[in-house]
Length: 302
Ligand code: XIL
Image 1 (tube, rainbow, N blue to C red):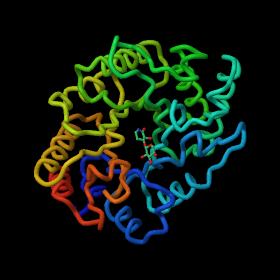
Image 2: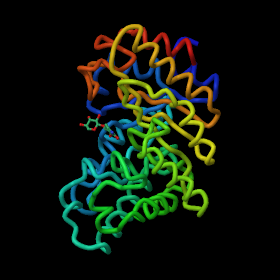
Image 3: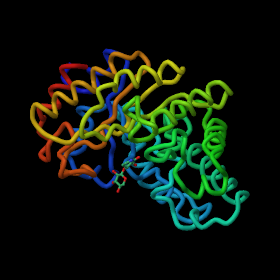
Image 4: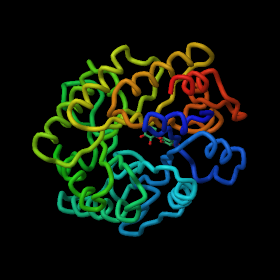
């Protein structure tokens, strides 16, 4: 099979890319997207600052463009993201009480996940809630954590299940790729606890913004999967070029394929040209949409 999405489908998986609505007018961008990928994640268009820039005034223009394109082409859509400390409007950050934060968070989840009900197959319900480093289980500071405490994550997942009962609900983060990292262990413990108590969680998203791929990456994926959740590689990009980059992409692909519950891979962009880390040339297609060594390594491994 001569494209990433088709090759991944042979194993029942998807191969996706983050997409920017503003690039959908560029013919070469759309051609590469449609040729290679079977899933999309809006790179910025579903974030809070885009969807609810002022209180209870929702705007879905950019995200709808991407979703409509994906639906027309039969691609899956990952929703990214409902609750995150970043790209969060000032009006949310300045809310004064727990009651207000809770009702604003619930209203946001109900509206956004409700708008895309039936179209988004998996939501990053909460993104990047854990602090870097230890001690294990430490959450980063945010208006959600400050006003609602650590239970805000569970509250968000419960609200998302009500808003779209058919969507897979994921916890997504970076630096949870190495099984031995304190941050990874904190997320692992949370997922285990959620499963034990019946808090609705279906998947873990490993962002996987890499320089080096951790040596125990496959083991880490397997350990999360063994908790009874799917694992998705959600924002993959790997700095470098040539053979070294190709080898790194091959090892990531192998790690996912080795675990039945690793259900799909998304690269964080279509082309190096528009990557958020463009100077790292971290993607599979170069700035002219040419296929890199890493592309062939992935296609060959899938
Ligand atoms: C990045 C986008 O790629 C940029 O365009 C934007 O300026 C900042 O956010 N983790 C995430 C993504 O979950 O949403 C981030 O995307 C990259 C890191």
